[in-house]
Image 1 (tube, rainbow, N blue to C red):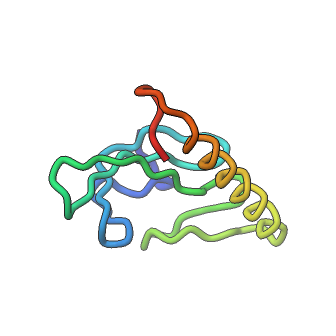
Image 2: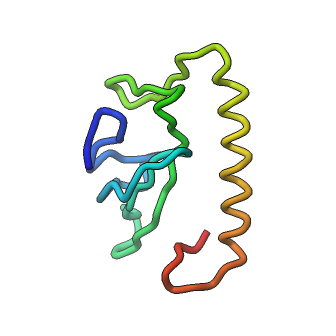
Amino acid sequence: MQSNEHLPIGYRIGGHYEIVKILGQGGFGIVYLVKDIHRLDALFVIKELFSRDFSYRYRDGRSVYNKAEAKNIFEKIKADIISEVNILRKIRNRNIVEA
């Protein structure tokens, strides 16, 4: 799964995490498997808020909102993702990523 919507494999997020694989994309965004470049064998999952309904990615990797009403939509989805993370923090299951 690779398109211009996803960050490329090998891209470094915050100079700390390197994208290993694109795990999926849904209504909220894109999920990446990343490795911590400072800790050997440390893998994590990062979910990027990116909706093709109101976002597009410049070639330099930045996401931009292309509709005037996108700010309100973005804030709503961001709040939903924060709620999702708070729920995941309470769940302990080997099949669910720890938040």
